[in-house]
Length: 147
Image (cartoon, rainbow, N blue to C red; front, side):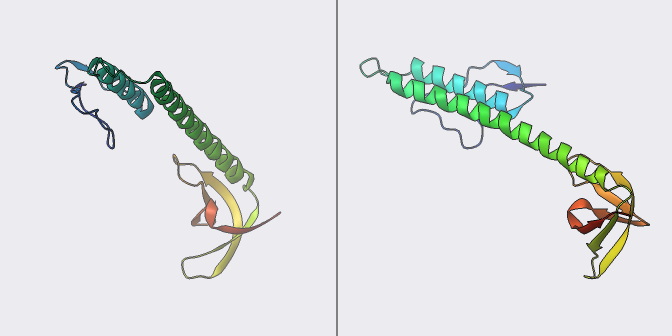
């Protein structure tokens, strides 16, 4: 799939007098981080190409913008790592509940108790514990005891 270059991300700004439209097409990036990096570089090149020769861009400002881009990329990477770690921890916690007797509060506000017989993982959701014929989200568990 291709898209016309010159589109901007929500919240992005274009320097006064600059134009991003080059009339060419390019492949759509797979990750938002990649798109943000490409957009930043395109904006920087456009800004440099359209700057007033009598008052060029401050080199300190350019370094600051580049540092902001690097910081954004690192924070995006850290967020992905943290999300992955959280999902792994939730799976480990859910698995550790197998065979344990747990307590939870049902939709009517009544405390229920039962033995965990199965655990299901579905994407980014909280692991679902099977207790008898009931499915309960891991986050709904209020107590655990050895069987």
